[in-house]
Length: 265
Image 1 (cartoon, rainbow, N blue to C red):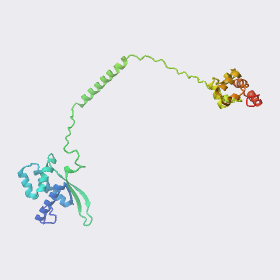
Image 2 (image 1 turned 135 degrees about the horizontal axis):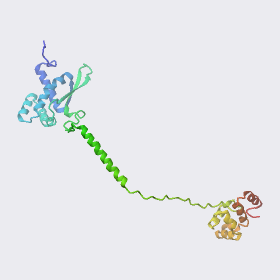
Image 3 (image 1 turned 90 degrees about the horizontal axis):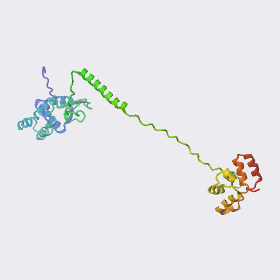
Image 4 (image 1 turned 30 degrees about the vertical axis):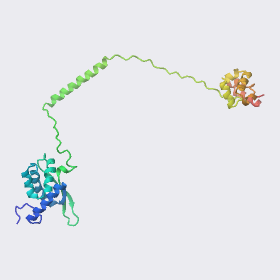
């Protein structure tokens, strides 16, 4: 009968079970985590953790005690030189067992046993000392004091604003639109082409009114200065046409232009 027998023999004799746990312990110290069955992982925790506690005292006596159990120099060196400094501030609970589901084939429950301080996900923030905030009993008094302090700061902030001198008034700037002189389309005059119109504008005749006031001899002189085929131009009727265009008598201008041939009567 097994009344009161809480040790899981793992289906092995005592010597075989002890050898199995020693091998698992050495592998755990070397790799920092191993995957095995859930029953073996649970049996390994009470075997491993007392050895890790002994490693906190890095003395020759403690090394000999751990070596007497493991009989492995590499595992002992890894425990005292690598693992011990990292778990020095931990009072206990050096390992963690995580279930991984059931194994395909024999349907055995798998688990991963690892050293807690070597897990990059769960081990963040361990060893960092945080100073707790001091609690004060008279919270109501400090609240009132802060409110009165805020009122004083508001009064001091608003007082200089009222004492500041008024800024001098700046007269508004009125923008006046400059009237741009738009040149008339001199090509509406019979006998004036685009190039002749450019020559006349360069000569200072830019509107119908100016053309109407100009004499035919002056217009002829402006055209002759540019040279080219403008020497054959006859500007005799241009002032009359320009006068009608300046007066916006377009019907009369059309009647006059119908009588002209190339600006000539």
